[in-house]
Every structure is written in C-alpha cells, then in structure tokens.
Length: 138
Image (cartoon, rainbow, N blue to C red; front, side, top):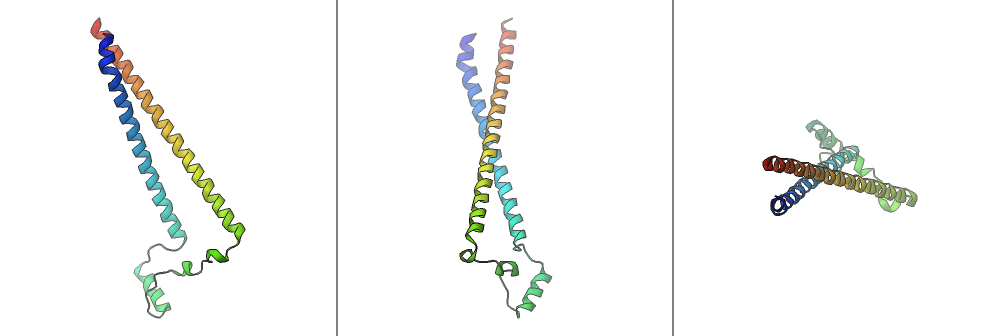
C-alpha cells in the first residue's frame, strides 16, 4: 500500500504542516500587535497623554483661563529635539535599535518554535497514519 501513501498521505501531511505553520505565524503577529499597542499605551501614560477625567479637564481649563488645551502640561515641558544633547539622542537611538533587534530575535525564535511544533505534529500524524495502514493490512 505504498502507492496509497505516495498519492494521498504525503501531500495531505504537507498541507497540514503548511496550515499549522500559517496559523502559528498569524497568532504570533497578533500577539506582537497587542504587545506594541500595550507598549504604546504605557508610553502615552508615562508622557502624561492619557485621557483626563472631567475634573482634571475642568481644573486645566480653569488654570489656562477657560481654554481647552489639547497639549497636556508634560508635553509642553518637553525639550525640542534640536536643543537636546547629541549624546542623549545617540543613546536613545542605540537603545531603540537594540530593542528592535531583540524583538526581531524573539519573533524569529517564536516562528522557529512554531515551525518545529508543526513539523512534530505532522510527524506524529504520519506515524498514526502508518500505524493505521499497518493495522488495515493485517
């Protein structure tokens, strides 16, 4: 019954492997998007740009003479990039690049792990199919 395996099992296992790896990749991408959004929200809060309550808005309006201010006080105190020290800018760039490389390495590791898991599952399915085939012959 080798012809049966050649005609049906191998392409089916390949399709299963591809489907599993695609699903794993999609799941990883979704997780990355969620992490990025959470990181963005955390940075926004740290910068003082989180949404204000009504009381806070009223207090700010009262202090600015009744005008609605779109920029919160923390953002107004930020030093413009042109006046920042070049070393500080370079350090921030280096930190950003290192974080990006770390994220890429982590993503690659997760993709490889997902591919290995899919391969393992496909091998198990092939072994089960082989066992069923042997049983059917006996």
